[in-house]
Amino acid sequence: LKAGTLYPLLHGLEEKGFVESYEKEAVGKIRKYYHITDSGNAAYEKALSEWLHAKKIITMLLQGGKDE
Image (cartoon, rainbow, N blue to C red; front, top):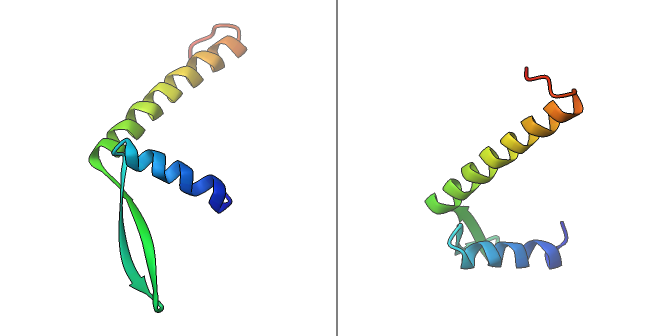
């Protein structure tokens, strides 16, 4: 991802409380680091569960409705 794509996404996630940032000096420059929060992990788990459910239904439909 390019910086013009990545950083707006990170800022949006930060506004929602899904990630937090902190600054630290590295190699003589101030760097910004991000880490996922508990609510970010919860949102990820929920989205993953929804995706896996949708994937299961799509797979069943493509296989003619057979549940495996």
